[in-house]
Image 1: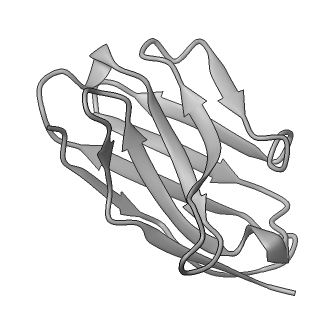
Image 2 (image 1 turned 90 degrees about the horizontal axis):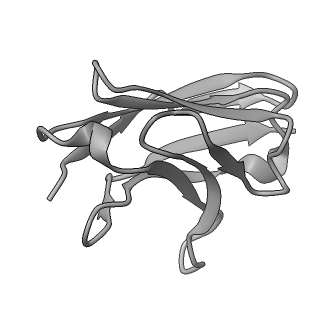
Amino acid sequence: QVQLVETGGGFVQAGGSLTLSCAASGRTFSAYAMGWFRRLAPGKEREFVARIMWNGVSTTYADSVKGRFTISRDNAKKTVYLQMNSLKFEDTAVYYCVAYDHPWSWGQGTQVTVSS
């Protein structure tokens, strides 16, 4: 399984920006899609945020973040990024990186808090 470590979370005012990073271990990082999910509150299901295919060409976003968030990857660095702009209070969540291998691999999560 792939080991994933997220960094870059923190506190930001509404309207601000943050960039999350997810570093992966393993030799086959470039072979699978990567993505981000978030959990808005304890006990709630994780919800899909964004996904990027193995070659970085095709991306998919949740409607709630479309136009504000950008997912990208650097296969040489085995890292996937989530650039978050125009942050809103409702973006406050724990953000999780996911590798779409078999089974899916998850990071430990990083907290993003947006003050209104």
